[in-house]
Length: 361
Image (cartoon, rainbow, N blue to C red; front, side):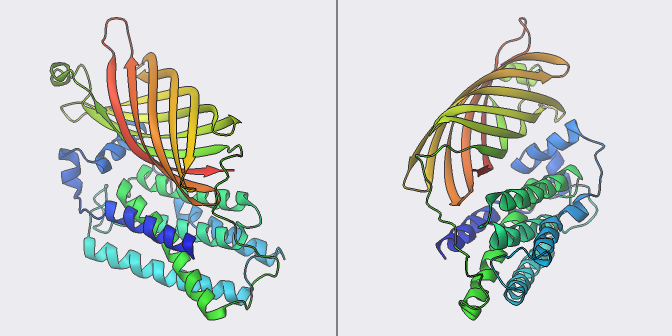
């Protein structure tokens, strides 16, 4: 019950972050979190268009049913599981459709006015959470696999020019929250009937004395510090978005190596954007407190590539994570990143603010 409430609260926070109405025309004229992330798609993969996300959203559900049909016992009997899933689907569908036709946000491609929230993403995270509920207690890799498929679905909706970033955030929150509410209702009806005798609910307690490997998907906004004259001459960009993957490899509990790869948009005063790619490696130091909170510092160095130029990339930052489940956490972070692409150009100092979802084991 505590975990369910925690997930629902997180969902409401993310949902509120995406509640602002945004038109496609306004997105081209103003800088927002949505347009900063969307600009990465426009400058890095402008011709991307594939329909695999229409099918990938159902992959966790297919795995759940396949495992169940193959005789691999899950948390619930067939009857109890189907009732839980029916509750979840009704709640998710009602929330998504109710918001789509009341908010009426235009899609990035201008095709329809039903962008917020993302139905594909809501479905993907709903089916991933169903898999997590039924089989996550047997192995965290079921949960990690399901949520990875859901995350790819969400990012692909941006890549396919169908949704803004906050549409994805809201869809994920609705998908996760609907399942926790659906299972909560079913648990009140069925009580102990139909539960596997060996089922045990994984503990939320985070063991800070153990080594934890981490894989993280992050999003953020980049702000260029100072040099206003160079920005106006378009020698330096004004701001941009960043999306990437990072990993932590522990050497001992709370201390280890970290690495990051990312794609960024570097947006100039005229509104034009150029792609930048970066790879970094370094060290991290974690400090766990209040059982479910974790403070992190990290220091990294590496290379970046911008408009066919390569250069030095240095970064230092801090983050605060909230552990939401036995193998998952969400984080807000701020990085100071400094870039230099040639001996004749000045160092470009930037600040990145963002958030991430992480899997740990």
